[in-house]
Length: 204
Image: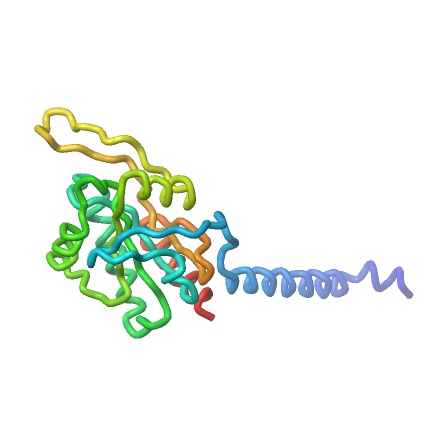
C-alpha cells in the first residue's frame, strides 16, 4: 500500500505543494522583517542648524533616515538630498514617528548658520529633519568611528579653480529606535522603496 502511495505522482505533487507553500510563507515573513543591525552605534552628539547640541539620545524611540553630504558638493550630494526629500514625502503624515538627519562631512565650512541657510534655500523646513555639524574631530568620530561610514580626504578637482570634492557615502542610511545602523540604500527607485518599507517596519 505504501509503495503505491510513494509511486503516485499525486503524492509527490502534494508534497511539492506543501513545500512551496512553506517556502512562500518563509519568504513573506522575511519581507516583513526589517534588516538586521549592521553596526551597533555608540552614543554620539553633534551640533544642529540652530547651534544646539543634538545626539543619539535625542533621536531614540523612533527610527531615523540619514544622509551624509556637504553644502558645496559638486557631485553626488544634490541628487542624494533630493532623493531624501522624496523619501520624506512618504512619511508626511508620520512626522511624530520618524526622524531625519543629515551630517555634513565638511564641518570646517558648514557651520550651523550655513546649514540653516542651506535648509531654507532648499526647502528643508521640517521639525523632524536636522542638519548636523561639529568640529572635524567630532564629525569624524561620529561618522567613521561610530557609524562605520566612509569619508575620504578633501580632493581639489582638476581644471576647476578652488572646487573640491570629499569622497563619502552615496547611500541613505536607516537607523532603528535604539540608534543602530540597520541598512544602507542606494538612490535607485527600487532601493528607495525598500528603505521606506524597512522604516515602516521599524515603526511597528
